[in-house]
Image (cartoon, rainbow, N blue to C red; front, side, top):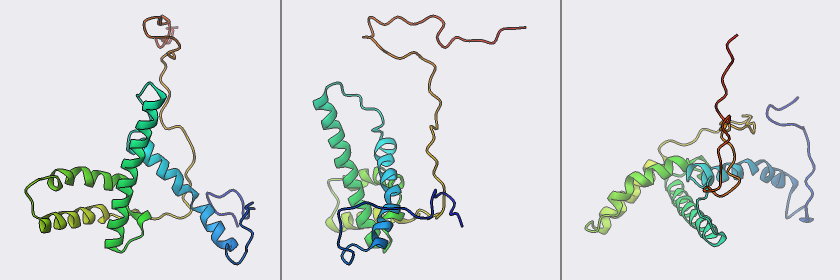
Length: 179
């Protein structure tokens, strides 16, 4: 019987973890199937946080930019973990995008200088509730095909400095001839 979304019924995992008692095959296979979560985490960093296009121009600044994205991502993930623990949920069912939106909405309230410690703890508890109030539904067997969602633009590529670049006159000005 074929499982929808999977190519094969069995597979081989090559590993240097040779102790079958310490590293059972079923646990290794379970980790293999969780690899899709890693793809989703990368999507969170690139798309949800806006790291799909880096605007820095030097390698040093690009490294700093990427490092700041990773620091911010890990801070949000840490809050998600605390919120999931308080709500007695698995952290993987807490939405990253929803958590980021909740954090952005609650930040002005938490950042006030003149609130008491008890009020701050109450606000943090409310933030955790907002982060976990809509858990992500798990949909086993769901197929996630890798496709390009947006069509590429019909502009020519920037292959020279802007002041030297000449636009090709016919580019993106195609029209259907009347017959």
